[in-house]
Length: 358
Image (cartoon, rainbow, N blue to C red; front, side):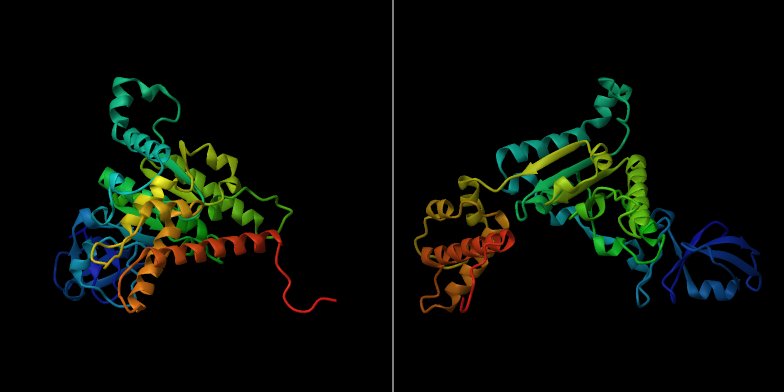
């Protein structure tokens, strides 16, 4: 019994037995995983409240902090305090996503580097290169809606690993020291579950270090960034970053990222493929020239096209014919382009005045 891990069916926490008398009335001493709180119970009471946990499913340094108790069988499921696990089975493969050729080739290289790492390490002597034993860190940068998140999922699919998508809001805490602990939890969870870390909107955490004179929080922010860099140095797994603001990255972070992949807006041929992907075969359709629609959509992202297709289908379902036509799609394209134009003018200060002028 001593040294085994047990799950408390009432508190939904995991404990380790540190001392046992071996009799039903004798005391059992155990500690709670996470904060190290120590408890003592008689063995017969202990056995009625606790279920044994197999070693391979014991989540290191983690606590189950769900609002209500969970069944013992659920202990084996992936549970994250920091983000969300996405199963590799729920991801598209690289060949099934539409990206510009140069971007896809860069992703193939990143995947190849992981797959052939051990071979090149020993057979080609890459182990002699300083820092080669560090983890594989990859940064995806570019405009919103260009396929960074779906690419992260495709990388996980190709490498046969689940993806841990980190929720930035779960990392940052107003309490001193908690943000650093949360950063460490990311790597603990990824290591235990052999998952790929994916940090979206990474510039929020990787931005340039602040001068201590800028504000009262600068010291804490810089400490958290140092903790992140230290964990990156120790991490031997795979970590992906995605950002729309690559220029904001701290240089010290950049040096720890082995490869940066740029995401440009899709070309016309890619736009045509994306349109076809986002209109289900079951949708009743009239004659549609996707090539012509793609030509009119230059400057839009894949995310924009997805929204255009969804809105077009809803629009068509409201019509008398109940059929998607090129007119429906073209109308939504114009609306999307107009919204982009207005947003650009708003950000640059070229706003039209409304009302009377003197």
